[in-house]
Image 1 (cartoon, rainbow, N blue to C red):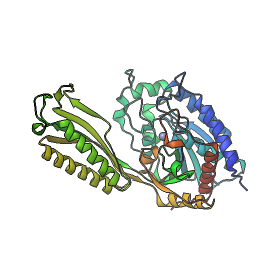
Image 2 (image 1 turned 120 degrees about the vertical axis):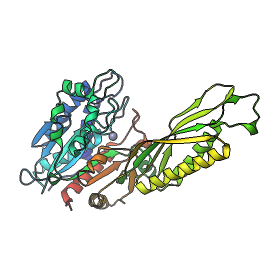
Image 3 (image 1 turned 135 degrees about the horizontal axis):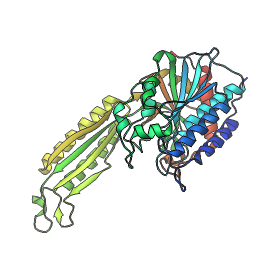
Image 4 (image 1 turned 45 degrees about the vertical axis):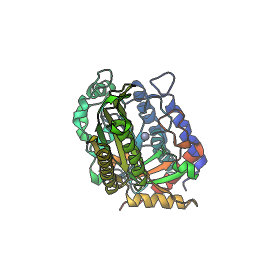
Length: 414
Ligand SMILES: [Zn+2]
């Protein structure tokens, strides 16, 4: 009988997380960008962890993804993939990404210790290009496996002028080997990713884990409001065409619309005022809108409502408004079978299953095009991430890995 003692699983996970935490390109904080020297060290460390945990084959693919395979009852069976990423942002926390990789290793280790083989193989994946900090690429390491790698990103350059292709070769990777990384649908029965929530919902509700229903789709728009610049002292208030005041009203309307949309969010992250002088009525304002929702129809309605509100405000204030789309990505729904399997594993431990959407993008988003995808969130303190203050407990990690282990042992692909 397999032992899935959460306490032990948590201690093992935290020891591994601590070992990875030491591998940084910066002396004072954690920084491990894709294909950097610290990433190389982390790849080798994870490969060693996978071997020691009992993986039958461990390899590093052409894009630097570490793949550890634990065979099922017979070799060569289709695989359930468990993965996340080991690259980080600059001045990062210790758990974003790494938790999901370590969780997969913990699952293999528990099965291996118990001498247990499943009807399917398990492959643990440690992706390297999730945070998209160094190169203008986007989830390239998981995209390659899902068969959606964008070859134009190979020529994209980092801030030192090094292209992804050059960095990949220096790292020991192989740009010519990328096409071969795409997996066949018949060989993969699912992809599961455990990740810290990166939001405050679970922490506020005092729940250790949650089940992701979908990764929200996201749309970005550039909004240009053009009024009339004028003298701050001589143009009476009633006769102004103040582009900033129009933009301010639009911003408040967008906030309200985002809050009203089902599981939606809307953010204005950039705003520039022109000419930007203390004594000039702003003639032009440019701002960005980032709108997300787990259902595409909700996001599309939210965008339409934002546009209508902006046009109505512009007309009322006698300014012009232009709205330019520059990014749209659809929502990625989680597999009902994986959500149900995770819910059963949670309920078996006398806890209520909490379902919630993921507002952040993850490797799971692209893996969902290859196979049924599911994600499990683990609470992080105050919802803080992408920050050295990112924090979670060993107890939660152990419990979450025990739940993942229970899920894996009972999962029946549909
Ligand atoms: Zn992450």
